[in-house]
Image (cartoon, rainbow, N blue to C red; front, side):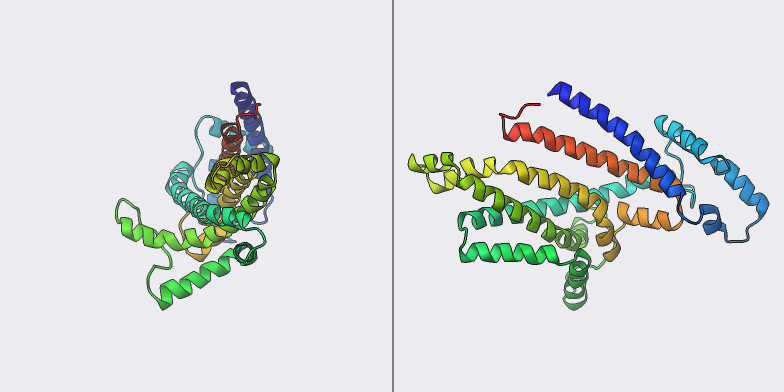
Length: 313
């Protein structure tokens, strides 16, 4: 296992280098440049020349990359071209909010989907199975932004239960924090719950038809033990895989929900930075997302061996 992890870390580092090259060149190929956007179409030529030289924008693009990559390796992630704030400070401020939203949605999805998936598989073909699979299909078909707007209309404007946007630190006002975060989490979590429910149901149906399940029932094991001990654990490998991909999807897909709820997370930071061609912020943000996604996938692979001891790397 240790050698496998070291190999994966090596591959991750190489992958990050390749991703950094792709990100850097693609971003610099976008039409428009930060100087024109920030200072207008007819700025002072001397000012523009001084700014370009200060940020290295006057260098050939490959030299800009090596300069930026060298600074990153030394722990210097640069500063925002727009307001001069260090990129690391911006990410440290925004990433906890996005992670709370992301993992809150996953936890909500797991809590809701595991009972639903188990019941749907246990009562295969019955009205409960039909109801739960229909729910999953509907929730997979509903766009997240539509569900978010529906929640805002119902719970914010009609009922006045929750604020429609904003952010409050939990240490300052925990109840206010819960009121702000609950609608984005639920709007996102419903879709995650639908995906996990369908995957768990499908996996458990296959497991429940296996010979060892028939043997466990023949030995007189209670149905609850057959379901929870023998069936669920052996159904978790594909479910854990899906959860890992959902986390990666959420890290990049929360942009829509963050815009709907005006949530100040990483997604809104990337969108805002892209509109101003704020290269340092965009590059480090996407690179951070890529690294986080690869770490999550490594954790998922390690979890396989914990769930199924027969798996070896």
